[in-house]
Length: 161
Image 1 (cartoon, rainbow, N blue to C red):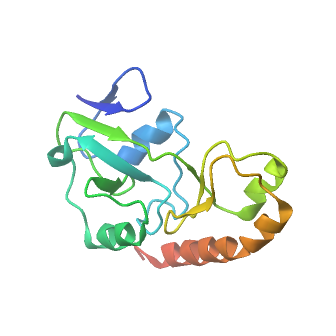
Image 2 (image 1 turned 90 degrees about the horizontal axis):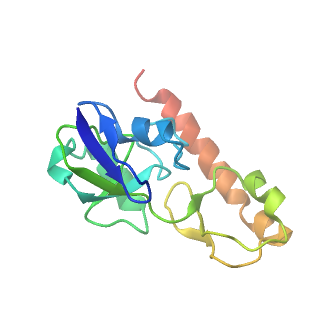
């Protein structure tokens, strides 16, 4: 067994070879999502590999294309759904922010300040800044997000067939 350390979690996670980072993050109750169903098409499982990049599978062409869309991409960025554990010593950090999967997710937050940045699920850009008030008019302006997510999910259904 190998260990995976996640910034913000007190204890390391025992991990097995060839399992995806996403599997362990979701098992630990992380807020990370996978809007495309783990096909590497969206940004919702984006993580930063702080240490142990050589202990993770190589970046695939599909993942490279998806990472290229991210506005907050760094040289140590990976998609947790595509990164498989190959060795020990992996330390990751989940970017700060909440990915929006549909604008109705914000309905219950209308009138409140965003407690964390609200991020676009395809390219990761900030839709609502930290501390800004979430208004109905702003949610209406985000209608394109629902179309983007629907299109991404439709594309993910055709992959692997």
